[in-house]
Amino acid sequence: MAQASSISLVFPAWNEEDYVERAVSRALDVLPRVTEDFEVIVVDDGSSDRTYEICQRLVRRHAALRVLHHEVNQKLGRALKTGFAATTKDVIVYSDIDLPWDLDEVERAIHLMEYLEADMICAFRLDRTSEGPRRIAYSYAYNLLVRTLFGVQVKDINFSFKVLHRRVLESIELRSTGSFIDAELVVKAIRQGFRVFQMGVDYFPRTRGVSTLASAPVIAKMLRELASLYRETKHPQHPSRPVRSAKSPVVAVDTARRIRRG
Image 1: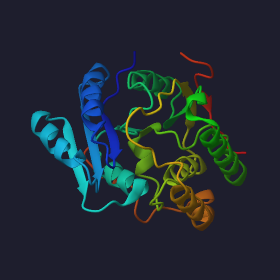
Image 2 (image 1 turned 90 degrees about the vertical axis):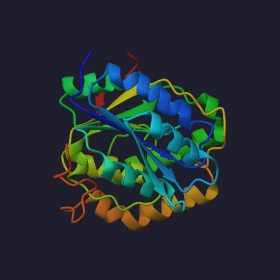
Image 3 (image 1 turned 45 degrees about the vertical axis):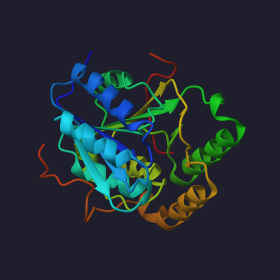
Image 4 (image 1 turned 135 degrees about the vertical axis):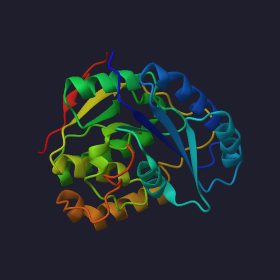
């Protein structure tokens, strides 16, 4: 399988004491099989539980682990931007810390990235029936809205498995502070001419804790940001503050499909 030159894996975390140690342990087991040069970055987004305490204990034991901390909760968009800006490797992988997909899939994503000469791989869930009808309906409607408004053929825009080359983050500016950040990232990358493909993966819903992604406040903020950032997301300009500085150190159905503008 493909060997990436270097990988940064970013985990945003808010009140994830039940998952953080499991996620870090799994990452430290998988990544050495893909590359010798990697880092795991956990962004504690102002957790009120033991998430940061556990992270501090883990970082003393693992040299490849870096922990960033927000004093107060700043929501998903800011947590991701903090993590992305801190990355130092060539390839960036983003995942929720409850591991909704098998981290072994990183190797396949890297292989597809090199074989297809892609700048970004976005995963989509092959089977979502375990989520229940309401969340499936919300997701279907939002994905349809994004496809219609931005003219991009994206199956599962908010799924937290994205693999991208550092040049993408060095070429775009992200302004979302909430869950619209996934759409902003993918749409701006496509609109700037980067090669973006999709691949299907098995989905594993969380078994501990509570997901807030389908809550009314999160959905409302996402739609407000979609409206306020619509024009600049669809027609991105040269970034005044790219996500990452260019001077930073540096087999399923529908396995891969290029995402194209409509």
